[in-house]
Image (tube, rainbow, N blue to C red; front, side, top):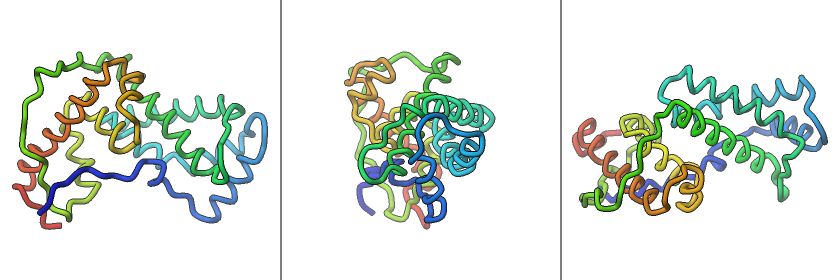
Length: 206
């Protein structure tokens, strides 16, 4: 058993488009101006499941997550003419762009619902042992454990570990000090350790 450092791949790397879908996407991204209704439908079918997975990490309620995804598509379609994918792999850039819109939409929804808690000061942070988890623990297991964390802990963990945001970017997005972002991340890992021990008894059989 070793230290589990939550070294997830960033979401943009997790999103996958197969060869045939990539050709369709390339055709859409090569165009300019507004999308046609058919192109919007194609993008919706290609990315709905992926963006739903992102939204569910922030919104525990499935119906609310569905609304977040639909709102995100509306925003993406409205802003499509302004999308500028840099580099040769526009599909990867487009995936990351959609994910960022979805993340922002989810956080806006949480703010409107007033479920964003007050920030935690540094002196409230307690020291705990390092997180210990079996190497066999799967990403899906940790995602399920994340649902048991307080809202702000889960959000910061998602942004930092899964989406690849820096602490200064998280601070700007959530309107909190960067030091608080670090605190929430540490407390999220502590919470995951406690939940892991509770549900897996300190071990994971795979």
